Figure (cartoon, rainbow, N blue to C red):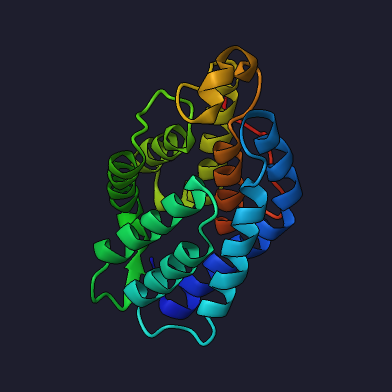
Length: 210
């Protein structure tokens, strides 16, 4: 199964809508451990991305590049910058492709993970969005494509549950390591919303697989 540029834009626009809806929640969560501007940053990324995707770019890398540039223009936080890096990496992984083969998503996520670690300096185990991306990647690699709409949100929800009881080890949150135990990492929550939106879920769920 694959997506053309128009279908990929539809997925990204769903993510934009969710980012705007979740902005207040993400600001509140970020305010517990950081600057409190994550939601505002993602809302700006979303609005600029919506504008960048109208009209629809002609191919897959152009879609990802347009969204990446929009996030770069909106960059008001490290998460916005990392989102731009992730989208640019996805564009490079799909150079000159007219369609996006969904079976390549795990390898794209692996490339994104490597790029984000190189750019942001975080590592797996630091309780960041990287841990959620890793959990999603590992799950998708073991599941047939038809199961992805259900198992992808479950994998991220399970990662949130696992890391909730651990301390943040990087960024401003590391200064409040003990206080971060029992709290969700805001970036992981943002990623959960985006995965839910991408897979067609209307609301974020804390459901985890058994």
